[in-house]
Each structure stands twice: as C-alpha cells, then as structure tokens.
Amino acid sequence: MTKRSARSRWRDSGLALLMLAPSGVILGMFVIYPLVKAVFLGRQRCSPTGKCPVTGGWQQYVDAFRSHEFQDALIVTIKYALITVPIGLVLGVGLAVLADKYLRGIGIFRTIFSSTVATSVAVASVMWFFLFNPNLGLLADWIGGVAKTPGLLQSPGTALWAVSASTIWANLGFTFIVVTAGLQSVPKDLYESAYVDGANGFTRFTNVTLPMISPVLLFATVVLTARAFESFGEIDLLTLGGPKAKTTTLTYLAFGKGLPTAADDGLRATVTVLLFFVLLILALLQFRGLEKRVHYGN
Amino acid sequence: MATETDALSRIRGWRKAGRYALLVTLAVIVLFPIYVMVVGSLKPGNKVLNDRLLPTNITFDAIRHAWQHGHLGRAMVNSAIVSAVITVAQLVTSILAAYAFVFLKFPGRSILFAVFLATLLVPLEATLTVNRRTMQSFGWLNSYKGLTVPFLATAFGIFMVRQVFLTIPKEMREAASMDGLGHIGFLREVAVPLSRPTLGALTLFAFLTSWNQYLWPVLVTTESRYNTVQTGLRALRFAALSEPNLLIAGTVIVALPIFVVLIAFQRQLVRGLTAGAVKG
Image (cartoon, rainbow over all chains, first blue to last red):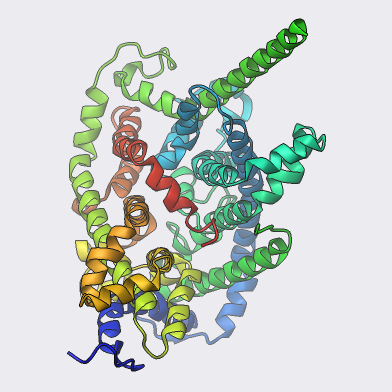
C-alpha cells in the first residue's frame, strides 16, 4: 500500500476505474452506443432479416419528417400531451390540496389517491379496455350513443380522449404523491403571515401555495409530457393506433404492430432519432419557459 | 361571546363535513375502475353482465382459469427474477459509481460525471432498435440476459446515491482514514449504512420500474415461457378467450402483488418519486 498522506492526483485512479467500470460498460453499451449507432442506422433501409443494404443518406430523416405518417403522429402526440398533462396536473393538485389537511382518517384518502401508481401501463390499459368495451363495459350503458356503437375506443372522434382518460387516471397517483410532497415542504408560517395580511383561501393558494410548489409542478410537467411522448403500452392495448391512425403517437409509429417500421430497423431508427430530437427540444423549451417562473426558495 | 364561538365551531363542523363528503366522492371515483375489475373477476363467466356493480354469484373460477390459461404463475416468477436481478445490480453499480464520484480523486471526474448524467436525456425508445439488434447478435433474444442486462446500471440510480453521499461530511472520511479504514471499509461500514433511506427508495423505484417494463420485453421475447406479467397480460388481451372475464381476472392477479408492495413501502415510494423534484 502507498502511504495515505501522499495526495497524488492519480492515487485513487485504479480503484475509481474498478468502481466505475460496471456502470460505464452498461451505459456505454446500451445507452450511448445505441444512440450514436441509431443516428447512422437511420440513414439505411433494412430488410426484415436485419440486413441493411440500402442507404438513403441523411435525406431519409428529412423525408421521414415530412411524411404525412410522421406529421400525423406528431400532431396526435401533441394533442395527447395537451389533453393528459394539464388535466392530470389540475386533478393531481386538486386532490393533493384537498388531502393536505389534518383530518381524522386522511391517511386512508392519501393511500387511495396514491393507489393508481401501483397499476402498470398494462394493468391500467386492460382495465379501461374493459370499461370502454361496447358490449361488456359499464360506460357504454351509461353514456350510450357513440359509446355503444361503435364504442369510445373505436370511434375516430373519441378514441384519443378515451385513451387519455386511461392515461390521466393511471398517472394520477404519481402526480398526487409528488404534489403532496411539495405541499408538505411549504413552511407553515408563510400561510400564517398571509392569513394575518388578510389573504383569503384562494389568494393564499395562488400567492403562497402555487409559487412554493412550482419546482414540483415543473418536475411533474416534464415527467408527464415525456410519458405522453413515450407512450406505447396504452396505445398497443387499447386501440393499436387506430381507428384511422387517430391514436398513432410517435412512439407507436416506431414500434407498433403492422406498421412499416416493424419490418425495417432503418426506418425505425429514423423515427426514434427524430423522436429523440423532438423530446430534447421540448425539454429545453419547458426548462427555458418555466424555469423563469419557478421559485426555488432560499 | 359564547354563542359567537358556538356559531363559529358549527361553521367549522359543516366545512369539515363538506370536505369529508368531497374526499369520499373523489375516492369513490378514483377507486371505481379497480372496484369494477375486482367484482367482475369474481363472477362466473356467463354472469358477468348481471349486477355488474355487486359481488353476486361469487366464484374464484375466473381467477383460476386466468391463472392457468395465461400461464401467469410462470410470468410472475419471470417478472420476479428479472426485477430482482435488475434491482440488486442497479443498487451495486449505483453505489460503486457514486462512491467513486464523491470520495475518490481522479482526473476527468467531473467530465465523466457529466457524460453519465447526460445519458438521462436519452429516451429509452431511441436506444431500443439498436439494443434489440445487439441482443440478436449475442443470441440473447428470448433469454433472461436479454431482459435484464441493458438495465443493470442507470444514471438515475448513480445520481440519487451520489446526492446522498455528498451529504456525508468529508471529515468523516478523513477520520476513518486516520483509523486505518480503507475506501472499501468506509463504503461498507459508514457510507452505505448512512444512506439507507435513499437506498431503500432506489430499491423500490428500480423494482417497480423493471416490474412495469412493457416495450422492451415485447421487443426481445417471442416465446411465451419468457413472458413477464406485463407481456403475459398482453398475450391474454390478444387471445381469443372462452369467457369474457378471464382478461379481467388476469388483470386483478397481475395488479395485486404490486398493490401490496406499494402499501407496505409507501414512504420509500414517495422518496423515490420525489427524488428528482426536490432540490438536492
């Protein structure tokens, strides 16, 4: 062993290498390499056997982006995010504020409101698939009309809304938990001084609560938006992207059943790399737009 | 004076009652889909349309058939193996890497950390196509290796453990070093025990994430004996079923263990989910 007091820049390097190697290998092989490789693979066209003999060049990205399939999927995804994120946030904040009081038995309500976090995408989607079923489901009888024939998931006008209902419900537990944690970190004396200043319940909410939980809201917004853009399971199980591609989101366009991408790794890489850039731009916009309004306390 | 406080407390009482009424209504709405599923799974297949909201004609037939038909026992074991391997590996790799980033001095440390952290920006979907090809070339399609190996380390886990290691005072490391405790000793006897709550949160988070994986198992497995509970449920969804409520029963079976785990470990879950939200 070398003497401990010898503070050389290199002294710990051997051990550091050993400790970082497992993570480094995995992240390198399965995150960094595949991303770089996908960028180049996205210029190729591949056969179902996995051979990629045709090179379309970088133009393939431009063509794919301009294709009406991609444009439609982008619009569907944006709509889906614009439905699920704001509604999900409002409901999550509402429930969290309502349950953030010292009441007897409030723990039970908190557990119930958090409970949907326990449902995986598959479980939540199959549940709602059953609820929306025009023959078996309750909603068909209650709502009638389009919910009965052809069914909310089968009608082009309602399918995306029906998928969104399932998503909002499934995400509710997550949003509730995150916002509740945010509310609990708001110092109580802030409310007291606002009360002394004569602020009513609503003003206290808009002037104290909202600014104080804004970091948590930014976090929830970013996560929910990313989930909307990366949704696959709910589309796969509820609608298979239909009817008339009205629920084909970007991720489903890349990995869905029976689509051109399913048999062509090159085209699939093109779409997923474009998705990566869409998400990157979105994340930058969200942080630039919202960071200014976010209050990070002391 | 007395009547005034009486009136005030009466108003408070009404407010409280109103709040409870609202809470109960919302709880019923949130739980409604779950309730419908559970009731549906307990009915005989031909009675599933009768008294849909009431548990009449209770039988466990549908649950039993779904268990057999969907090979859910096997799927449950597969999910448990895959999730356990991924969780344990992520804990180990995260602890080791985080320790190096916090307590070891080596050239390029901050650059390397930035590179690790940047992988958080890469959506899973962007890597899956190439990863599937890698698995194919390794001959790892339809195998536990294919289901687990790409997820044995995550930047999220490393970041989370690093944040808690940073809170350990440097003086403790120096004092331990004076006492002749090496890095491995300090890691095992001081750093890990001090970080137990965060490691608990990471354990639950990693387990849940891998248990709930959907797209990757769909891409790398085609044989039903490698179905996880999620892809098993998917198989049930697309199968032609003899009884309409087999799918419902299968969903209830798949959902149950995670409900139990989450109710038992609520605190860890909250910590895990909010790790990214609260400033470190």
